[in-house]
Length: 202
Image (cartoon, rainbow, N blue to C red):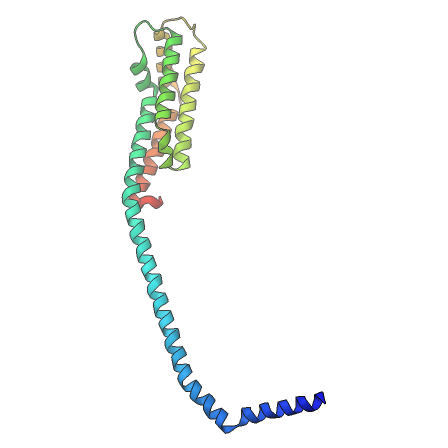
């Protein structure tokens, strides 16, 4: 009984499929559907291309606006860090800090305090510069602190400050390798020039 039902159902389906009216109806439907699908696909592609180009245009405009803000901030950061490094250089630092009547210990503490204060005052500049530049500035600070401590330990704490002053000057004049401050200034200058040449992507 089931087999008869299946045969009858298949017969009706085949009759419907090969019926001329069905074929004509199907052709009529396709005649309107295919052009509509082509138009729809074309419209989709045109709108998609327009939206993509519009998005790119907005991204370029946003990048340009961002650069107009970030590049001056970055250049200002390089300027401040270069000034910080210059102020940490012994030839600038010691004459600025030393006072009459100071002992070696007094001058040492004043130098260390000055370097740490200047560095902490410029901590926010690390946001605008590369890791390399900021790491270089931090290294200079540590090396300057270590150099002052090393020289001061060779002297009597209550000796006149001029002894420490003269030892530091002698160290600067006789050291054969480049001073940390000079290396740091070169790193800062190189990166600042790259930013000026290539923009915020540098």
